[in-house]
Image: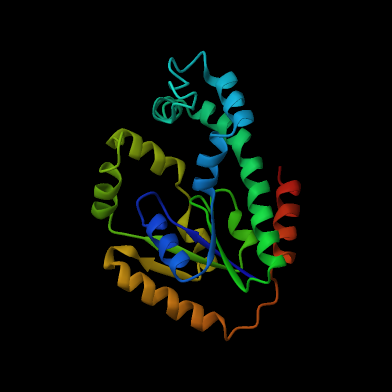
Length: 222
């Protein structure tokens, strides 16, 4: 089974790209979507409430759900507390991701995708056989993100700082760059061309071997 990573900064078109992949019949694991689902689980909900109820006034909505808008506003102004939330969620996301890959392997999926925004910041690229990096003109990126509910220029700036990494250092790990500003048809065409190309390659390290390697890397560098 080949594992392909999808990454890119906020506003570069990851959601749209994963929708394209799903329409093509591919299985995609989205770390962001997984986090949103986890926050709704009672146990995680209670843990978040315990961490932040004295810091965020209305941490719980009338529907007994986490007030993600106010919590998000607080966290991006308090990076250390954002680290605390990530320490809570990331192990759970990793567990869900592993279950996703295991299930895909059991049903003999040939290719699956992992949608991970901070692929290089957290060294997640080590568990993928190929990496597709999405990019877009800065003006288009800003327009896309600012149009989102509750988004501000200050929040966008904080997010981009959080996602920043030395791009030159990881160029060799990127298998394909796609400029999503060229439109949906262009993205679809590039993905099809890329998938056709890698089918001709002989993959030496595939899941779970590479995933095991990534886990060992985490242990040795934690």
